[in-house]
Image (cartoon, rainbow, N blue to C red; front, side, top):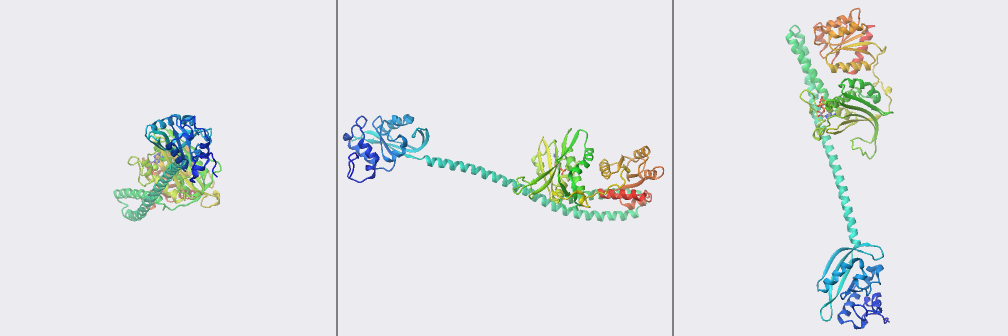
Length: 571
Ligand SMILES: Nc1ncnc2c1ncn2[C@@H]1O[C@H](COP(=O)(O)OP(=O)(O)OP(=O)(O)O)[C@@H](O)[C@H]1O
Ligand SMILES: [Mg+2]
């Protein structure tokens, strides 16, 4: 049985007409509101309220100018803590926080117009706290029996959850876009690196092929030059020309060797190297290649691991890097040589093309001019140089790149225009100790302390030779010409070995110097260094018998062996 308080009094079985709001409306005293006592409601008002109660959509009617509120069960749910306070209340009192908004709604619709909002954001205090609420709102006038608009029917559909979800999705999409953009740019970088590697690989193959054939051609020229020399000994003019040609062949051979180094096809002689010791040994030598205005410092982290490389090539690579730094420093500046251990983990965040593992990192850093992006992109290309004609062949970094790659390492260059450059060479760690491999052990001067006088007019060759001999344990004196060498000989007297270039500027010939040095009171052993073949020098009669000749270019080991042998033979 239906309770008496239920409104409207209908025999039809509609859920809304039997719900909570139907009871509350029936039980409410409407006499002091704009709607007047319930039993005097017009047909239109009754019909509107009946429609409102029957609707499953949250509906509220604002009646008369005050906008007296009457609503259904669904709206009661929306009003939450404000329900049932709102029933029979003028709308501006019911929702004081949005009074102005509702005033406009009532005034607009009582004039016969409608209003619609989609996802309208309002701040409501439904449960005592301000909260942002989004709603779809549709307002339309409700007519009295006489046809005039007397109330406003409002459809209130809350969309807060949808709006917040969309917002979240949007943010997610944005961060997703950022993440995708990051991933794409990382990929582009990786592809660029890959292209660079491929380019160098292709140039390497080409260069290696050319160098190999070039070497064979040089070998033929050289062999034939020597044969011609045999038959033209008595024609000084021709001999001179042939010598120039031999020099050119030597230069070509050096070039081919550099190209082979870039192409990773040079024969390497790896040994266990203690980088810290190596630095200590070559530092003086490197400093000598620098003007006084450039300071060279070294920093070796303690406990630096060993590496397994061709020591001579490593020294050569470091020399190339230091020379590059020197050239990049205009007036004065600093070069720092560092050795440190580094480990590349499984996830390899370093960006280096190296498998995970332990590496020794040798770094040459300068505060010179730095490189532009375009120079950096081409720096490893053979014959790429920004230096003036004759100042650089553009093979320095190519050789370094080839040698390090061939040694299972990699080169990482960080550079900034105007700030400087840092070139890091990574080599795999070697767990053996330096003395464990016979190859790595350098032939040392057995007695030590023998005095060697180096005579060489080419400053770079002289410096390199002095350094190598010093490393071998000899006491080294040096001179630039035969005349100055004679002066040194006379002053020091106790020179054990004269190591001299064959052809030098000046009036005193090397052969004459050798004669003086090998005779009493000096009795020095003589070793000649020459880029020419042994035969010409013999046949030109410039060497005394028993004088040793070392062919240029010579390696550290060639030098060590020849000097030791010559000194031992004297005893
Ligand atoms: N430390 C550096 N600072 C600035 N630029 C550098 C540095 N190292 C190399 N470069 C740039 O890279 C180019 C290539 O270097 P690379 O050593 O291969 O050739 P090079 O020094 O010009 O000639 P070479 O070494 O054969 O005498 C250089 O010409 C220079 O422009
Ligand atoms: Mg260079």
